[in-house]
Image 1 (tube, rainbow, N blue to C red):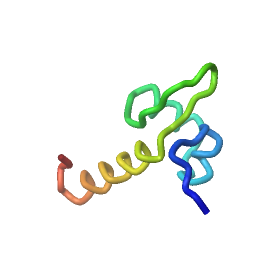
Image 2 (spheres, helix red, strand yellow):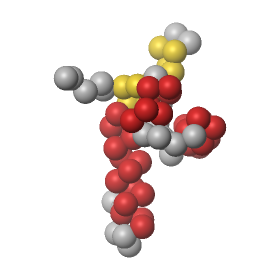
Image 3 (cartoon, rainbow, N blue to C red):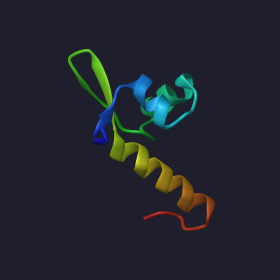
Image 4 (tube, rainbow, N blue to C red):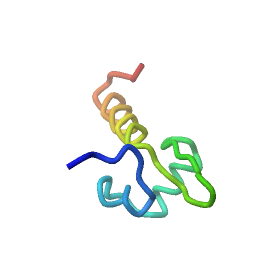
Length: 65
């Protein structure tokens, strides 16, 4: 099965199970990057991975790069 390179918000919630409101707050603040095509919003998989890596680094004292 091929991995998606970007998700619609509802799809992102199936692979990154946080609340919908929190997801949109994180998009608005820039913590998670997204883009639109027409009226459709997409969240790059790499943006979710980068967010997780930043969280791990900050919680393990790495500080991130």
